Length: 515
Ligand SMILES: [Zn+2]
Image (cartoon, rainbow, N blue to C red; front, side, top):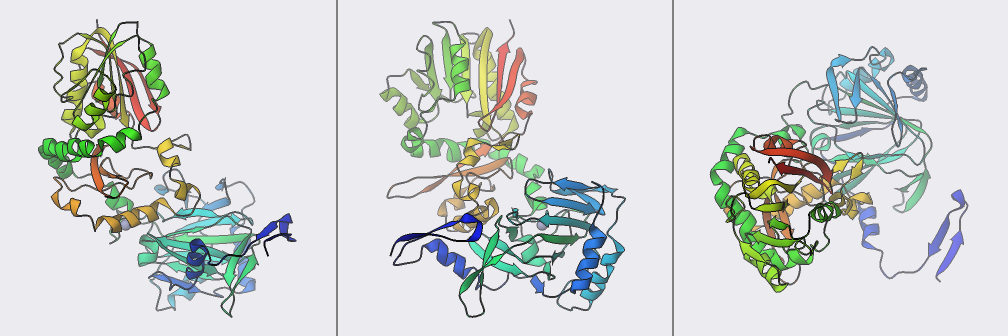
């Protein structure tokens, strides 16, 4: 009996069809109810009475727009300190006039009787108001901002909160008037979020599932400022540990730059040349535009030409390309292009001879600042006075004006909220432990999770080959901070910066050699 039925709620339509087996997603969903709570997560039902609930709501009501933000998905108010959403942090030097209302004090007194819960006197309160259909994206409360534990009181309506770590998913039903305490693993190593839905699917006492309508819910999140770096034991989601860019690392990179680039750039590109080339055919419009800006018969040099996709963009130019990878040069030669092999730090080209250079997605493979600078100097050397160069490097920041780069937009699982970036990172770190390639790395660097935001500047980016022999190659990258490329360019003599811009997740510059 395959059928379509109209159901009463919100004019929804149900499509019915028989299946032999439940889809796997459905099974995961069901299993997510039967898991034990993450370590450190405690739920205390009926923590406040109906009368206390009313008094608390009264106490946190603010008449004016004081410290109130209308976020995309919900209304929030802050007490004690403002939580700044851009940085996901608080400014400890700027306490708010409005402290946590004293009407809340009985909560910690009541909590202190519970042996299972770490002691805390909060100094920051965030009030979230959720209308039905609103939620909060999966996140971890910034480690360095707040100490352990974090308290969350649910008022007015039940809801369901999802906890995730890697591939693990645990649904937690939060009844109205319950207190949730997140500490240890649950606070540091799991993300939590609420799906934006009008109703939840929840288990019944008999073990089946049923729907539960949401109504307006107010949550009171109580936290205490840390005022120091985080010292937790869970590095994956820890901003303090992720932000560490020790000088020792820079030194190690400088010392081993040549071997690192050989092993984790040159050798890798040779191995993946064909597959890489198959995924790179569309020229970026801004690069094409640059190539169209030269007079006919100008000499163009593409440094790091890859599969040569820019060499035929403007056929009126005399275009030549060079690369380190024999595999990629073979691809170019097969297309009848003029290419040769060399290193971008030592171009076998006469000084002052080239009308235009492009260097797209190359310099971010150089493992020290000195070498990145040298590459820019070398481009400048070969340019004739008045000649121009265009350089693209990968940007650490893959979001601009709230818009994700193409690279991030291709992460369908995250964009459709089936999982989170954090969960993907945790999953990758598990997978990598089984990789033998990790043993012979020159420098120990974090491995980036593809199609997620960058956490550090110096990283290995995995390249997974398809086909029978599935291999993961690790490519070295230095992703650039904003203005880092322009800054490097100020140290190159005889150049004038013409334009700098952000394009397709890259920082880009066009510069000219002084006449
Ligand atoms: Zn931490």
